[in-house]
Image 1 (cartoon, rainbow, N blue to C red):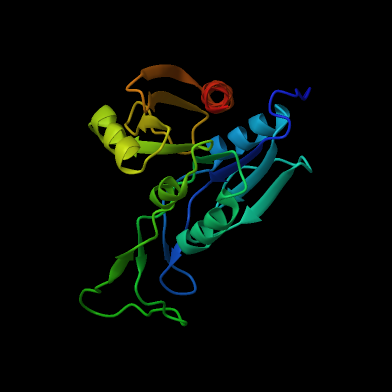
Image 2 (image 1 turned 135 degrees about the horizontal axis):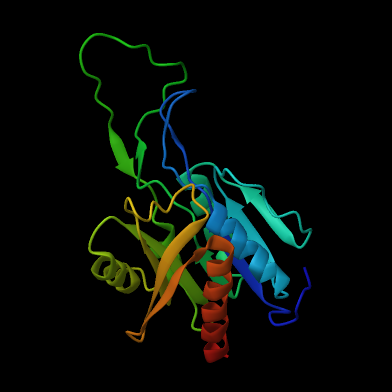
Length: 225
């Protein structure tokens, strides 16, 4: 594909995929995120001239192969948090497309837990909130974008997330029987902005949605300059 110079000199951080929170050496808490959207976003930013950090968890799609995309594997929420916080001060934009687990086991068993009679209780603690932390650290000239996957009250929940995390935009999508969101080629996205504007990006292939989302983010970045 032909590269443009639209984002030459800009640095962008993108997260992708799911974090897996280990219970024991063979079991984990996770979700069904494929990483397809995050990978498509990283590639689109690169093709527009940006220097890209792709911070990825557990994904089920090929990673972009361009040498200009720096890839860092972070399988757990804590590892992804640590890398994002470290890199954020040096980037112009962070787009957090990864599906980070909300909870992680308090204790990790170093050996496989054997099945026994009766119930098993698993004690969990919250994982660090990457979007909220970056929102607290965000400088005036930085753009911060997050995602909201909801099964109900999409706009209301996405709006709350936009405000509470101090993001510039939330890309929201519903997870339903008609729009499963995970492990499919298409998705349907609504963008919510800090100025109370809302824009439907439509239902499209994820790589087309990546182009549309980057279009919106480039406009936000130009507004900051």
